[in-house]
Amino acid sequence: ADWVSRTRAGLTEGRFPARAFNDVDVHALEQERLFAKAWCFLAHESEIPSPGDYVTRKIGNNNLIVARDEHGVIHANLNMCRHRGNVMCKSEMGNASHFRCSYHGWTYKNSGELVGVPYMKEGYEGRLKRKDWGLVAVRVDTYEGLVFGCLDPEGPSLAEYLGGFQFYLDLYLKHGLGGVEVHGPPDHWVADTDWKICAENFAGDGYHTPVAHQWGFHLGYFPSSGTTHSQGWAASIPGKGHGIGLGHGPGYPAFSGFPDQVVAGMKEAMSPEQVAVFSQIRTAVGTVFPNLSFLMQPFSLVPGDPGVRFVTMRLYHPAGPGRMEMYSWCLVPKDAPEDYKAEAYRAYTLAFGQAGTFEQDDFENWTKVTASAGSGLVRDLDFPYIMGMESEPVPEFPGPGHVVRPYVNDTNFRNMWSRWGDYLAGEA
Ligand code: FES
Ligand code: FE
Image (cartoon, rainbow, N blue to C red):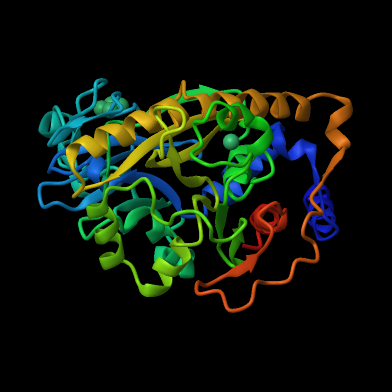
C-alpha cells in the first residue's frame, strides 16, 4: 500500500518507478485489482463468424472460451469444468457445438449450459441440478466488432468505459461500411517483457521511432523523406478521458496507401470530424487501457515505393512478472479487393508479425528494459516522465480529448499510470 501511494505521488511530479515493470507483488496486485475489474479485449467478431466457432483467450490469470452459440450470440465462459476444475477446451480455436470434459465426461453446450452428466441417475440420485452447474459466465460486450470481457459483474458498461474514445477507434475500424475483419489467425508468442512497456509504447512513444527503427527510414521502408514520420497517437484512459498527440501536421498525403475504394468507404462510414482528424496523420498508434493497442502505418514492400497501409491490433497479456503473451492481428477492410488484403498482410507480417523487423526492434529494447527493472540496484530507481508537463491543449481540434503537440510527449503515460495507480489502490 505504501509503495502504491508513493508511486501515485511520484507521478504528479513526473516520476515512475522501474520496479513497476518487473515485480512479483505488482503482478499479483494487477491481477487482483486491475484485470479483475477493467474491460479487457477478448477477440474480434470475425475470428468467430459462424455458430460454434470459438477461440480460447485469457483475462488476467483466467482462461476463457469465447464462443458463438447456435443463435449467433457470443459468450465468454471460464474454461473450467464445474465438476473438479479440469480445463474444458485445450485448443486455441475451432468449431464445436458442445465441450466434453476429458476427466469424468461432463458435457456443456457452447453457450455454457451443462447438458450431460455421466451416471446422473445412479450416481447423483436426483440431487444434482444441471442448471446450477453451468460454466461460469463473464460479462461480454462489443464495439464495432471488438469483443471485450469484464470479470466484474458490477461497474460501468463497455460504452461508458470507452467513452469518447470510440471516435478514435473508428479510425482503425470503420474502413468501409462493412468494417474490418482479421486476416488469418493472430500471431501468438511469449516474451520476457512486461505488458506495460508495450502498452506505453503504443500509447504515444513517438520518441523511439527515429532511433529504434532508424534502419527502416534508411532503407526506404517508411515512405517518407525525413527521418521521422508525421505521427498521431491516442490513448483511452477510462475516468481520465483521452490523450491525443499530433506530429508535424499536414503535408503528407492523407489516406495514402489504401485503395481508392477503401478511402471512399471510410469517408462514407466516418463523420466529417473523423475524416478531418484522419487527414492530419500519417501513422497512428493508440492504446485502450489497459492492454489493447492499434497501429496504422504505410510500409513500402519495395524500398522507395509509396507503400501499402496496414492495420495491426495487439493484445499484451500479462503472463507473469516480467513476462507477456503477445497476440497480434492484421485487420483488413472487409470490402477491400483481395489483392490489397494480401498485400496489407504481407506488409504487416514483414513489419509487425512475430518475426517482423519493427517488432524485432521493439522487443530487443523491451526485453532489456524488463530485465533491468528486475535487477537489484535498479528496483528503487525512478524514471523521468516529465516531457510535456506544461503542454497546453491544441485549440479547436475537431476530435474529443486532450490534444497536445509535439507528439514526443509523456502526457499520456503519466495519465495511464496514474489510472493504473487508481486501480491498484482500489479506487478506480
Ligand atoms: Fe470435468 Fe470431472 S473434472 S467431469
Ligand atoms: Fe516501435
